[in-house]
Image 1 (cartoon, rainbow, N blue to C red):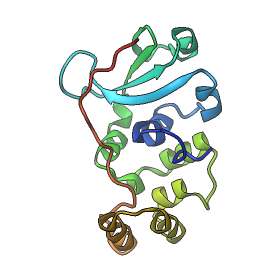
Image 2: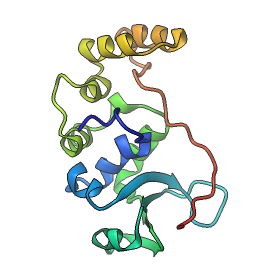
Image 3: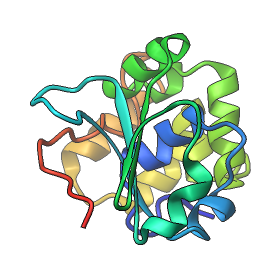
Image 4: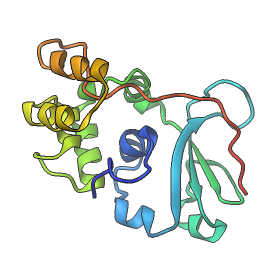
Length: 171
């Protein structure tokens, strides 16, 4: 399933599969999953929490576990484990090609993506990924960024997540 087709945010594309390595997109989306968010449950700052939002409360029951810190209505929240703090920081700064190999594989496995996919190209900064992006992106600044991404180790093919503050309600 191509994570770039549809309305998946970057948290769903990249972070969710790292935090839930045994989960597949089939299982998640068959349970009326809407989107994953990073955020806070009760403050105006990020507090290393990932929030899963479902269309129906009944559909989230399979996702309540020992790591759940909150569940109500159609929202389940988990604390990001300490052992994944470095990956979380890489995600927040958009350093997708710097993810550990295990994390990259978890992302590819979750989405069932091959080496020829755009997702693989972003994670590994491949020439093929660069070409896919250059052929689909319209923005000139982004095209220039992508073009220099192979030569410059600090430039990623995909921008960092767009972190916005908004209230997420269960209904």
